[in-house]
Amino acid sequence: MPAAQAPTAWQSATVVRITDETHRAKTFRLRLERPRPHLPGQHYVIRLTAPDGYTASRSYSVASAPDGSDEVDFTVERLEGGEVSTYLHEVVEPGDDLEVRGPLGGWFVWDGVTPAVLIGGGSGIVPLMAMLRLARDTGRRDLVRLVVSVRSPDELLYAAELPGPETTIVFTREAPPHARRAPGRLTAEDLPALPAPDALAYVCGSTGFADAATALLIEAGVLSDRIRVERFGATGDPSGPPQ
Image (tube, rainbow, N blue to C red):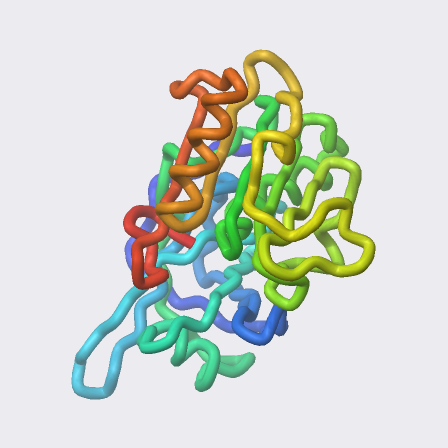
C-alpha cells in the first residue's frame, strides 16, 4: 500500500453519493479534484463558506479503505447545533461541491500489515471501518479484530457490512433477539485476544469511552505504548483528529 503523502492546500470535492446509515448518520462519497493517497485512520477537514465570507470547518475521518481511486467516504453524524453536520445533512445534495483539505494525521493510522485490535464506541467506528475494509480487501482478515460498542441496533453504523468472524458488536442499552450477550457496557470479557504479541490497539470514541476501553486493554496486559487513542470532545466534535 502506498504511503500517504503530505496534505495539499484546500481543494474542491464533488458529492457523488449520499447514503443513509442510521436516522442520525449519513455517508458522503466525495470525488476529489486532486486525489491523494491516504492511510486508514486519517481524516480530512471539510470547510463551508457563506456568501458573507463566514467559514465553519470540521474534521471527519475517512471511512473508506485506500483503493487508488479519486473517491473517499466520510460518515457524518448529525449533531444538534452542529453547523457543519447540520448543513451536510439538510442542504448538501449529490452534485454539490465542497472544500476539503487532507489527508491529515500520522499517529492514529494503520499500515495494513501490523496485527491490530480495533475498539470503537458509537461513531468512533468510522476510522476503524477503514482499517477493517482494508484488511478485508487485501485478504488479511486475520490481522484485525474489531469490537464496536453501540447503544442500540438503530444506531449501529454499517449494520449490513459489519458482521463477520473478525468483528464483535456490543449493545449497551438495547440488544436484538439474536445478540450474544445482554445489553451492558463493554467489559474485559468482550475484548478479543490479540492477533499477535506485537499487535497494536486502536481505540476511538468519546473521552469517557476511550478512557474506559484503554483501562480494559491495560488490565488485559496490553502495554500502553501499543495503544493508540482518538477521543471526541464533549460536544461531539473531535478534540483531536476526529471522527
